[in-house]
Length: 290
Image (cartoon, rainbow, N blue to C red; front, side, top):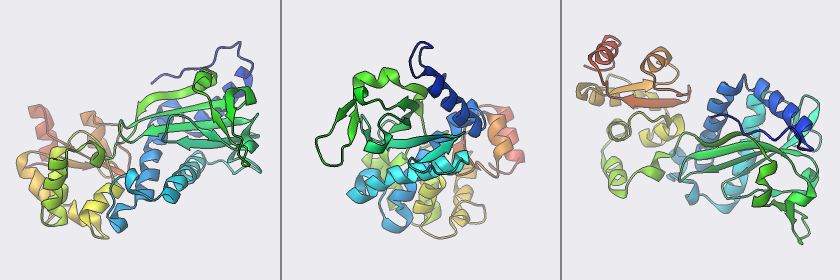
């Protein structure tokens, strides 16, 4: 999880070093950044997929215009999380310097004319591997394959990735479980009658991995999705007799930390089967297993 900084002899070292330090500070420190920024990607994708209202489950099912909007959603979430203002020309103003935010789910980034020669926060992710990269680069013209189109966009050349200060590289972010489930598992979950049974089937199959609130809401198929999680008729009633605890990142933070299940954000849920008698006793005392 360590950074891959530029060499101190790099011509952009001073500027990029200052921006990276400022971004990390605004994020609350490196450890927090490495948890929170990847989690924002899951949030952005899930909000665009909008499974509860559309019946879609993967980014590949969205329309072309929606895929374009993913970048805007990532930009908004990151800027709001860092609590920095929008720049006059670029996406955010960090300690007096404007910096753009560019997201891609492909290999490389397309950079608009206004960012050429200026710094950018680069975000790249893969829904298939649930790995992401986040770094800062000064978008020098010689790093780009410039478009002959009227829009004047440039593609950052793969050979120029050495000029990126990577804050995190090939780092896991919360996966879209629909991307990793087999077709048979997906059909089994979806064939369960009722939201509570679908959620129980999901959390029995996928344990020790955080699942986002948006995805839980999609399976519950009702506005008060927490009702389908709780005891008294929810998924926990089905899982607890099997010795499976279903924990919420917000309400069960202390237990999650004690069991070493993190990182799990307040927007995620995680299921867990105790490995030791002590763990079982802990979960039983908290009412999570029978």
